[in-house]
Length: 372
Ligand code: OSB
Ligand code: MG
Image (cartoon, rainbow, N blue to C red; front, side, top):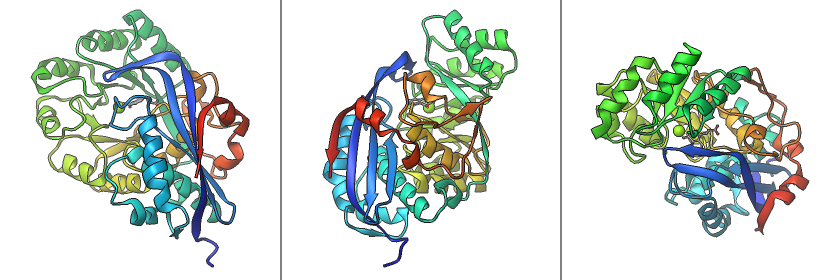
């Protein structure tokens, strides 16, 4: 048998419960306690691949949640791939490509298989996907706070930690004043906003008022299921629109670009079903002169390590959403994991998750474990 052939013989699903240091408030709601899923796949040769399903406890960002992902992994997706032969992570689609949706779950499987594949190829997923960057610039994402003063304090902390750009969460009524206060206090910093679908087209005047602040972009102002209204909105405002929730596939990206719904795309590998689809969206955006950046989902170091793989590709020209997990949570499951120094991650081309993961911490934070 070809030594690079992969056959998954065992899968472990770990559900972890974590408390955020500070509630994270967005246009879609508030996250105080986070649950996540770590997936461990073992190949018949004994090579192990870990990944994280970038879920939230409630289906408030996209339709999946941590618990629906456990069901889709356990009942539908993993049984389709266990004991099947693969020569490349993309071969997974032969087995579960017919399953609609559930991109976060599919990404978790694909990314764990990418880890196994990269280990066997003595490389990293990032390199195998065509990544060229050895350093990734990162920015911070600031949830809505009780007051302007409190927001200013957090922006100040982000800038002191040298994050390369600041992203403010906004919604109607928590937009113009907050952005103005940040501009007045911190001047021409690299600044953007993320509305997480909190506006509709009737509020174009509210959104247009933000044009005066020379923002890098406004992320996902309108509905998560829309691209048409975004195209209308883009014609009415100067600030570049970046899509997040609306882009679940290469096909979504193609249509959004074609109708002018965005000038920038936030590629979250989890949201689009994994690293392979992300690479295709990246390449399409390159061809169309649409810059991209790597979004985040408050992942632990495991998910962030996977995100850094895709963020090494050349068209990731804006800073990634990637704060240190230890700023969000009391602890992380990686030992000597993700290090952010002066707003940058130095990509360790030799790092593999299996050697960094601290299994005692996984067990301690685990509230449910399923073995297939
Ligand atoms: O819209 O980008 C988003 C977190 C959870 C769900 C959606 C989003 C976010 C963030 C934080 O903005 C990104 C991060 O630093 O992980
Ligand atoms: Mg977003």
